[in-house]
Image (tube, rainbow, N blue to C red; front, side, top):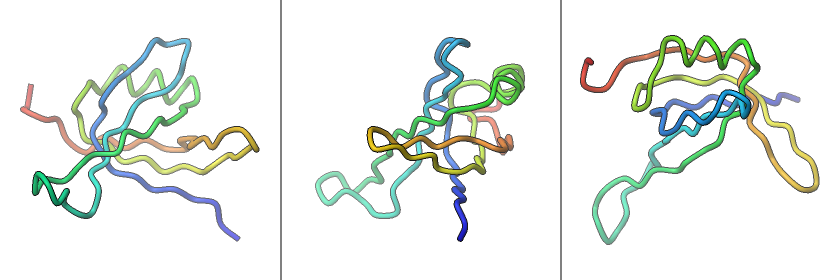
Amino acid sequence: MLNMVTLVGRIDKIPQITNNTIQLKVPRNHKNQDTNLYDDDLITITLTENLYKNLTDYCKENDLVGIKGHIEATPLEIKIIADKVTFLSSKGGN
């Protein structure tokens, strides 16, 4: 059995350091029938302290990143834990 998650999306929000999480905007694979646009899902990703520090040193909001990780589930919540974060591109080139 394999517990692996791969996501590609834009960093939506980088909360306080004590939280060690980011919000990732991941577009859905189908268009909204009302707007004819792709809606985004906001997914909370939990990072190790080392990954979080590296990400905040090199990435900013709206940067495109790839996340490889795994799911940890309890009866009360499901978490996505990042094992690796890869910087892919910066939006706007700033």
